[in-house]
Length: 488
Ligand SMILES: Cc1ncc(COP(=O)(O)O)c(C=O)c1O
Image (tube, rainbow, N blue to C red; front, side, top):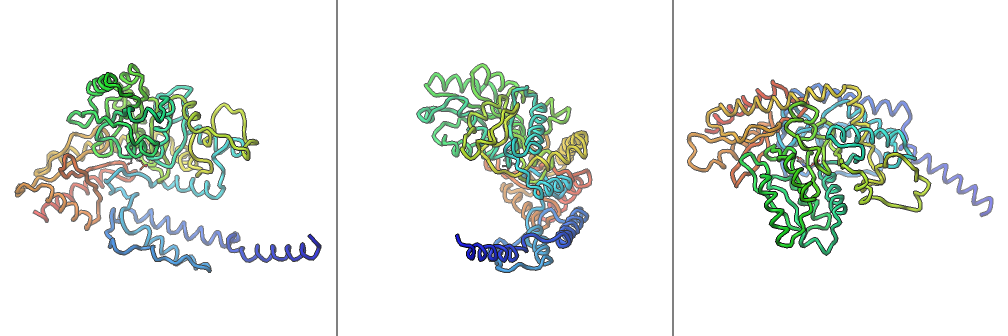
């Protein structure tokens, strides 16, 4: 390359860097944007008690689908307004204390601050030798959760993006640890119940196990797996030439909040030599409470367990966890080698997330979990979870004594079902309940989601928002009564 062309190239590089300068606002501009974000965040938090839990919207208004992605940058004030009015306002207000639908979660301000720092510094939480602080911080959190589940020194795991992905990697790990080969799949059997979260079925499909038999074990009248039926089914399947390999228990099912008999299932899994996986995405963090520990007795007998800190620890979406009793099983399924990463190999006493999960570059999820745990202490989380257990009991009892309300079983944790049985009911109870649901959605002050049990429409009450207290529970009862009398 001659000298002239080098000079031209240098000029062009300087000019391009200048033109791309907008990507790196100076400190004054950064502070202006940060101030706008903080001002909005504070206004959002302060107004939460008055905000609706649900804002109805026109499904035909595809909000952002025609949004221009502009060639030139725009002024931030309009963009912040867009966030407020077009992103945050319509639909479900997931951090409202009046959100009793699905499984609530999220909303810890201190977690958002942790996340902000994770994004600013962008520490690479994949490999220890590149980011020892970030990786060891996450590993410490994983070890803490393993201890909470009663797992021993050989255990480990990783922070996933959520319960579905964590369950998927659990299935892959169980498949490999059980030595299943493609030729076995048509004879392989998984034991679960009709209450098992649908992501487990999807995970089996994604893991290449679409062919394997799902054996739905009968449940008792509280939607818990019958362990004697499980044992009989396994024996029968073996006799018939099938290959039983996996039991999936629920520690708090989504629909009904049911806890399978984990201790008994653990015993069967051990005797029958099956992998025992527990989906505790919703219920797992109740292990922080004394009564939760009693209810979830036997969780320590599992080979793998999924927890969702974005549910039970009130963190923002995007924080799940898979824990396994023997971390080597995770490494066997997810280990890799790559020439361009050779110089990152180190002999550690623990695995890096990249070695035991499907991700390489990954969000540094640890900081959003570590900061609130350290700032507030575990005791604050324990108290809040105890409050949720008691609030759901309170709500169940109050609804149970309400005329025209039929409740499902009492909450085993903090989820239960109920439906309206009006006196004027001419047989179509489902229609009454659908009307009631529609009117709650239009009103929006509280949010409840629904399910079907044997084709019967039921409301679900799920108490797990950090902002749900007695006041919100009473509001739920008042609004229900108000709407029922309006409709009937
Ligand atoms: C019991 C259970 N398992 C799995 C999931 C899926 O978790 P995620 O939504 O984090 O993917 C949920 C979600 O509500 C759940 O309640």
